[in-house]
Image (cartoon, rainbow, N blue to C red; front, side, top):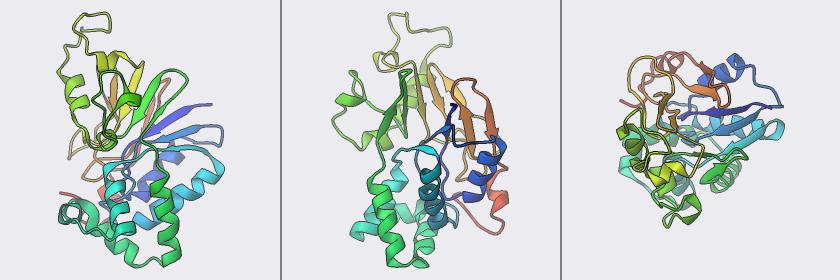
Length: 241
């Protein structure tokens, strides 16, 4: 069994289909999705439908992203957030306008059942954004930190390349886990990039919401497969700028 981790999709269903094909994904693989399934491109409803169907045939872990939580608040509570609309939510709203109430109810359950983090048997941590508690994720006080925090990635990038876990100044947060996989913070908004490693943290958000590709990586071998730049798969659409 391979363990494959997938970065932020942002309604880019066509890109998701590409990377699953390019990675030759089978039902024996475990797929860990880091969240942000919607907001940016036009296929929000179709993307979530696809993920729900995929879960019936494959071993999937679906983590909660901040955009998924914002979408849930709109769908379930009719909470209108102007900032959400400006950052990709308008495309999602328009996608759901074409969906019937049964579909919306099923999607609400999907969003509600997302998990905040996943820890595998190799002590590898997967979550959308980060955590702040020095004792680890199970001690985090505020759940929203898991899908909004950016300090974990900032911390990892600030470390000197030669600093390892044995160093007395190595951050305790990072030393708790063998590896940490996150999305949330795009590595770049333009060009083709690959997942980036800093300390023991891997950032899988290669800018699919903007001008970048969607990425999938084998966590054991670190082999990466990428889609075409997602904006080229949705000609005529704006995405997020």
